[in-house]
Amino acid sequence: MVDWDRVSSDNVVAALHEYDRLGADGFFAQHGYGPSRSYELIWNERHYPHKAILGTAYELATGQRLAPGDFEGGKAGAVRVLGKLGFTVETLP
Image 1 (cartoon, rainbow, N blue to C red):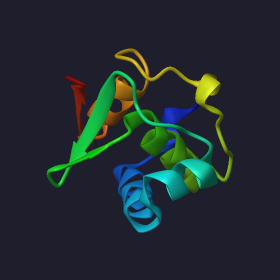
Image 2 (image 1 turned 30 degrees about the vertical axis):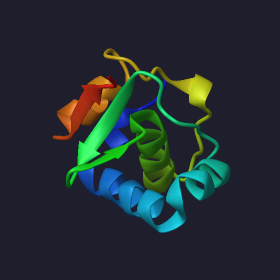
Image 3 (image 1 turned 135 degrees about the vertical axis):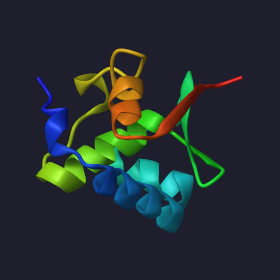
């Protein structure tokens, strides 16, 4: 079970900056995720792959890398966690 209490909004922002720095392809290659299929995180009017950002935030907070299959990306998973941290996640059109 993943302990999401160890992840702060600062960890999420650090993951967002990492995504911006590396670009999508570099970020996915380095952190082991891919593009979102159902939801996206909206931050500073930009769109991000919500599950990849949260998984990377967890890695930054704990030093432990999660594989995409280690946690759910939907409403009961990454969407809920990011919402509790104050982030906006929307359904992809």
